[in-house]
Each structure stands twice: as structure tokens, then as C-alpha cells.
Length: 418
Image (cartoon, rainbow, N blue to C red; front, side, top):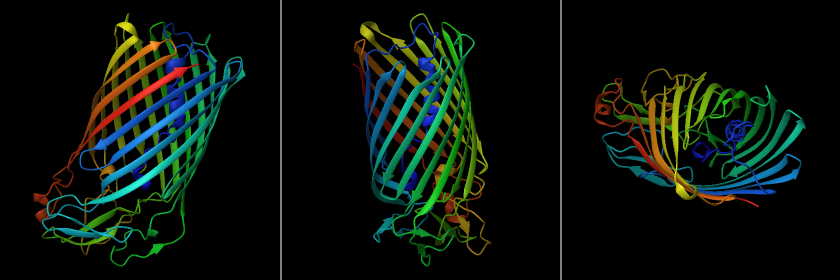
């Protein structure tokens, strides 16, 4: 399932730099590592109501191999099941579709058409963290992930340079990913009618190059701040081969046909990320903000706040609130009008539309010893968009063209040092 996969490896550069927040020198309350091995494990369950469910176990290990030198590896398994919108709009009549495997499925009148799917993903990654000089560190990584119709191979390198008596860390990183897309039944021709479209039998490729520049500053013994800039350039096959677009009558709004979506074959994205960590006498506040924009017309704002409240006995609770809002891609269309000239690109994937997501949750952690800790978190996510757009036609005005998506997120984690 090409675009429904979760990508913990894809954010390796950003995650590595964010790790500086908890490991930066000079912080009196930074976590100390002990022993030669660090083991982290977790089980994540992401469950959308009446849609997609993802179960993701992961384990990572970090080994000290020299003075201040480490090797680490991670294994992630994803099991994805459920139903995903196929891109067609809800209408006043039942709609029947053919899945890539040739099976028929029907969406009742007035409901968003959903396509059942099942997929698994295996991802492995490794990183070498090595001091290159007294004030300079290098992080070198590689990753590999595969699922039924998608394979990704990646490599990354990052330099962290401590200056200003180790109160400032400058970071620069590069990453490259070579992905192979092999859709079930082949890739359809973009914007071809579903009934007559032909598919190609060869695997398609996508290449992505990422750049990261960042600075982390210890302001005082209680305050740490970070600022990152990232740029990502992707090229190749960026279309979702399983998504379609409804073709509707220009007067009645009733669906008369379907076409496969088509996206541009390149995408450039830029982002600015800021984070602040402030230590109160007992507790810790985490604040962050990200602004992202791309050449598809998508711009997004993400604000995040966490408050870690320390309890007795090595325990803590941490409320979490996250707000995300984005504008629609230039080629996003909930439907196309029959007989009108076809645009160069079009997609009805709701993830490219105007949307707002609010996530709220609570995490509980406990450290039975100085070298082990448990944590569990539960979060609720609600995503909403423009359910009744102003350009809806005829019977479309009676339909919810962007129903809310609600999901529960559960995670249990265990970390140990020995």
C-alpha cells in the first residue's frame, strides 16, 4: 500500500537532530547513559474508526564500541489492515468498483467509497555515531524497507559541531532515498478512464534527496532551544496508483465515470522547525512549531506542546496537545466535470486537501531503576476538512465530501541500559 505506509526511517535526519535536545552538553538535567548497551522497544497501535489500523512493534539497540563511539540498529514491523478512501466522492446512488486484485466492492449511497486492503512492511536501519574531532561528531546511517508494492533504500550523513564552549551545536545533514514502486496489477496511465485504462508492467522509481541545517543552543541551565531548516526534493513516480477521481455531470452532480489520479513527477518541500525545552524546578515543558511549504501549493503549520509533570517514585505524566493545519495542493479536486478539458494533474486524495488535525493525549512513564523505564501513552486524533465545498454541484451538495477522520493511538515502550 504505497502511500499508506508509515515512515519512521524517512525522518532519520530530523530525528537525529532532535535528539540533541535531550543529549546536548551543559544541561544539568540531561539523561545520563550507563553501560555499553541501550535497548529501546515499543508497540504502537494506530486505529482509525471504521478505517485503517496499523500495528507496529519496533526494537532498537545501541552499542558503545569505543570512547564516545556507538553503533545502533533498528527493526520495525508494520501490519496494516482496514479500508482506505479510493478517491471517489459520495453520491446519491450505490457505487461499484473493482479492486487491483479483480474483486468487486460496493459503496452504499451517501457514503465515501472505501477500498479494503492488507499489507505488511519490514524496515531495518543502522547508524554509526563517531567523534571525528574533539568538537565534531559524525552520524552515518543506512536504511532498507519493503512491503508488497514498495521498496526503499536510503543512506544519510550528518555532522554535529560543538562551539561556544559546547553550548552551541551546529548541524548539517544529507540523505538520499531510492524507492521502487510496483503496484498490484501495474501502474495505470494518469487521468485515463478506469474502465479503459491500461497498466504498465514495469516497476517505477522515485528518488528523494534531503538537506538539513540546524543549530541547538543551551541558553542557560534550564533552557534549551533548537532551530532547523530542511529541504527535500523528490522526483519520479509520485502518483498513488490506487486513487481515482469522480467525473460528474456538470448540472446534476451525479457521477458518470471515474479516472485515475495523476500528480506531478517532482516535488520540492521546505520546512522551518523550532523547539524550546524549559526546565521548571520540578517539571519540563516542550514547545515546538513547524512551518512547511512546497511547490505543489501545500503549506502547513504544526504547533506542539508537552508538559512533563514529575511524580514521586521516578514516575511522571505528560499531557500532549498538537495542532496541524494545511492548505490544499493546487491540483486537488474533489471531482472533475464531465466534458470539461482535463487538467494536467488532478487528485482527490483527502490528504492533499485543506484539512485540520487536532491530537490530544496523555503519557505515563515510570523508572523502576536508573537504567530502565517504562512508558505508555494514549492519544485521540480528529481530522476534519471542507465537508460541503462551495463548488459542489447538484446532488453533491447533499453529500459529505470530506467526512471527519478519528483515530486512537496507543503505545507501550520499554527502555533499558546494561
